[in-house]
Image (cartoon, rainbow, N blue to C red):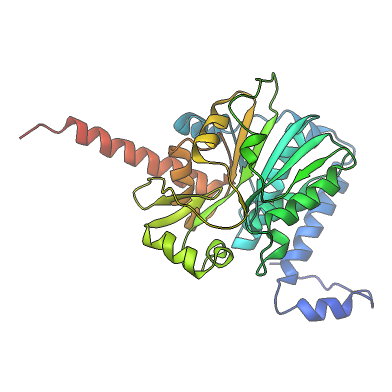
Length: 319
């Protein structure tokens, strides 16, 4: 690997010294150089721009669409080596998708979490007539305040102002996203959320508190998608959680996923999330997936093996 000495301005040196043991400066410099030099080399050509506008689906994306009955799949080409970089990569791809799809009159419901934070960071500001809805629990999260749904909704409202409207946690999101909405010719209703394994120490458990998280674990909850909980058998676990909340039910997510003008976008990747992603896909709670290459291959490979096992079981003679 090549080495390069980098000179730092005087005003930047104290900040770099503060963070040098907590972040990988080499990765940051390499990424910045890659973006800048790629832009310099391609500034005379429209090929890169046209590739983004008219980007054909890859073979792996088409496989996932067919396997799980999805409307759209976007796979990040960045082979991230750690969880933080993976979230950033998926956030960039998810934001690019929303930048292309969001139009005047759209409704955007977004759940909290660090993955959603990465998406919001990469969205471009523009005046847009849009309704933004926060999805999740509580009014704030003392552990990751920046990633709470209310914070993200406020940031989105600032990005799309002055014609944007925002609804924070506490109302019923199904008042604005329901089955009676007239069908539109273009995608209009968007839900963006991630999924994760559920355990006593996970971020969602810390937000909900020990009493609620213990109740969920006692009910056999192993993961969630958009605050809808699954057990290890892939069954949805209905739960009543006290306190302020704005949650779209599984039936509402399924309804939106079936609408031609609805996009329920699951943004997640990494080995630890494969099981949760698969459960959400098989339950038909989403119709759009943003993930990474390794996760996409795992979803296809395991789905194929599972289908073969089911075929063998059905073909087995009765004794």
